[in-house]
Image (tube, rainbow, N blue to C red):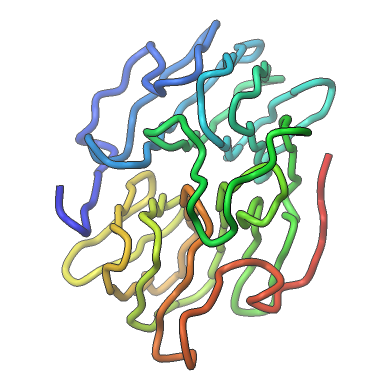
Amino acid sequence: MSAVDVVFADERPIGHGYPAPTAEVNGGCTARQVSPDGASLWLVAADLAAGTEMRWGTEHGDEAVYVRSGSLVVDGRVCPSDGAMVVEAGVAATAIAESGTSIVHVGPTDSVPPSDGLRGPAETQGRGVRVVGPDGLWATVDDTQRTRFFSDASSPTNRLWLLATDRPQYFESSAHSHSQDELIHVLRGEIRVGRRVIGEGDTLWVAADRRYKLYSGDDGVHFINYRRDASVMTSPNYDGPLLEAGESTHMTWVGDTR
């Protein structure tokens, strides 16, 4: 596995089993893993039939489920389309698809939560399932983007980092790097890294501290970005490493929790 890798969805087998290592699915389901084998992070894209249950035991790290379409119900709370639920480490949970539901499920290979990161270990008391609506916890919304944090690793009880950005027009990033491994999963449009083209349903893997640059297609792109722990970005746009979190990047607190 290289420092920058692309996993193409159409090259991965799709089946009726559920390939995530920590959750069980009871009911109608088709799913495939769209992340590199042997990586520190994994990603599963799945379609769930109405009434299908997802169940977690207690042997897992911080995980998240982004709902592409449809909705999931957990403890009477509804996670709608374009929202996400965070299942914090060690928490047993059950989510049920209200209707036909498409999801992207992410998690770490290591079930032990990180303790030596930028924010230190998360608290063990008070962990649960956090349901965040489509507006996110922190957001930047203007004519050029709709970017939202569902989790920015700053919660007292988890260190998961999950961001979604929707760019309606051409987008080009600076050449930059992050201090954590990451997965970028394309929901709409495409991105390019060098000569590699990552389209809808595909996933880009970038190892920690690897410098790269993103270009979108002419019609923009919509993707989610997942990391296991808090990270800093190094870019010529900033005087020094920037802690990547809602407050430090001057996003607006929205707090769309359910």
